[in-house]
Image (cartoon, rainbow, N blue to C red):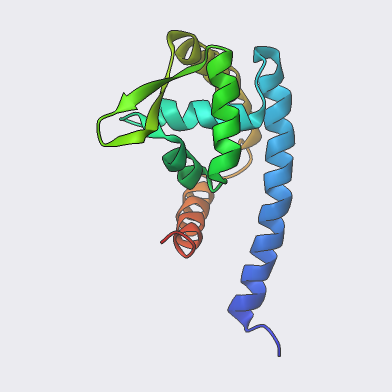
Length: 147
């Protein structure tokens, strides 16, 4: 059996996405290190900072495409270091809500101050149209896997 033309293109996108994921994790670790963060912890801070409401560990994991157990482990460490805290969830007795502490908010703001010029410089040679098309396409592909 052979790939269709779309299947072949999709496979190439998957392989390139794996490569990009690794590169972004490495680069994220590098730029987050001065703040005592890893790219994984940065992702959790970002998920919480960009959400309009507190999130549960399961919601963070689902949004990030990670396992609940991996996110729980990171959240526990981040709670111990004062970046996040648990709050009671009025909708669920056992699934606590995770919120940024003032220290977590300040750390995320410092991370943004590092990330914004980094992002602007990295994409300086790519058109806004290409970036928007890429984002739309990635969201369509992600939608194939979230149910």
